[in-house]
Length: 418
Ligand SMILES: Nc1ncnc2c1ncn2[C@@H]1O[C@H](COP(=O)(O)OP(=O)(O)OP(=O)(O)O)[C@@H](O)[C@H]1O
Image (cartoon, rainbow, N blue to C red; front, side, top):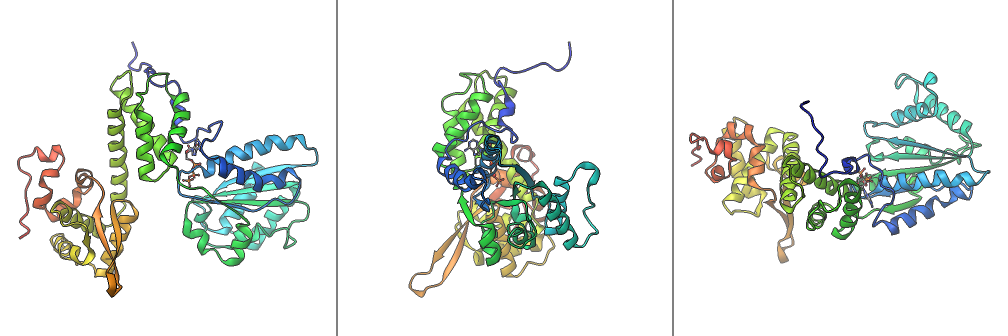
């Protein structure tokens, strides 16, 4: 007998939980889909399309809604002979300049034998090639720029929506759909870009627990066999998703991790306990990834705040974190950073969701200040702070939280911080 055997007791189609799965219907997005459909209506009317800007946090269905509506649009235009419709979809992740976007678009529009190199041309020549390719298509062209916030200069975002108005296109009607999860990107656009690119804006809010339940139920029906999921599983995954960020991707990932753990257990049903383990497992991965990306000073600030938290000293102001941080920095053989730079590290930790920050008001004297607190379980944080513990030593407050393999070593050395 071979060493591999099929184990499909739980999953009917696990791929339905993967990122690249396109659901047939989008649930819980009626209002946004209506607004989006209205904004796309000029295409069907053979009119100049709107430029549309979609924004909202990560995992709230911006790309899914775009793919869903554009695939319908592509089908529905076929009934009108006077519409020649073309779609170009570009994800801007990894493309930071207008030049790179323009060369990629030229290459998307050209056949394989006629591609241009991604360096070496003056920008104006690449734009000329782009106008030529676009105008040759004729009809209506929609260009989708997903994750458009990666682009660091405005040029293409100004040129593309205005290509017709500026006389660069004569036969083609062009519309741009920009998609972004970076709220500051839209605010930082220059007024002239904003007014053309953001002609129609559609905001996708975070999902609440009810929305996430609907989304998860839809996926689970395809992914799992009937009656395999305990009744509490989907509500629990949805509740965690809503509490975290209202992100459908994260909730679907949790459901998949939950199913995988149940499968690894050879369990015939998926239970709440599998959800809890799945959540811990994903959280550990997320924390490790966040912590690994920090500098040593970031680690030292985090370790300092963690020890204060375990001594019940949180929430705490940065000036009260500073003595502990400075002590740890010295132990690690590093000069402590100035207070402002230390606060930058606290902000970064808060941005990564590793710690929480609350703005407080000093009352009648007017000033505001920030207080910091820990959000994550100490065990998870410590398991990712190995190097710092080696450099600084084990603080008394964390000893009982060191995870079992370290804990079991009777020799875990405590450092004297007095
Ligand atoms: N309303 C919905 N119904 C069904 N599935 C959904 C819905 N919203 C999101 N999803 C699913 O959640 C995942 C994330 O959605 P999507 O990629 O559209 O998010 P996004 O807002 O574009 O995020 P990002 O800004 O990170 O690209 C996808 O697998 C998508 O199919």
